[in-house]
Image 1 (cartoon, rainbow, N blue to C red):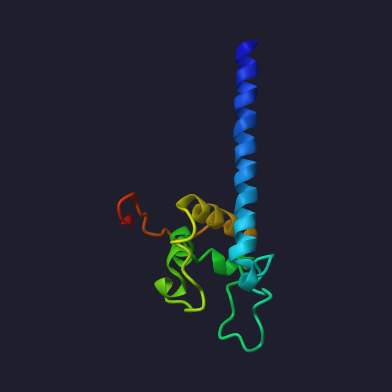
Image 2: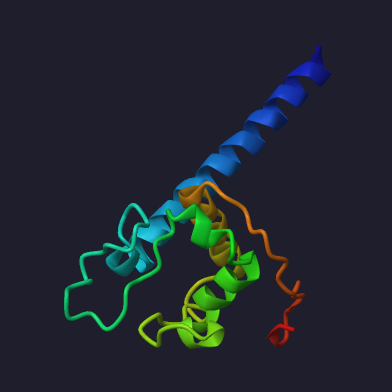
Length: 133
């Protein structure tokens, strides 16, 4: 009986942690990304006007997003648009967001497109002393 209670408690804890992380990722997206990419991720944020220099990526476009590796998305968030040969209007957030927050944003963006990558990105290893290698 006690094993069942412990198992249920652990499963509930894992579920609650995942739910909290998803909520945190949405909050991070709403704060850092939605101004340009829109609250729905459709590229129609409040900062985007007809005079805006570029069209922010539409994360709901599964066909386009399937061609982006998770590493492409991660690198754009960390190092800004120029890191993946995209717009300089996309700022780097690597000094602001933790690795966990960035990975949460990548997962949240994948939820928006309801897709996964068809491309394999270069797998990077996190080195605590110097960042990604």
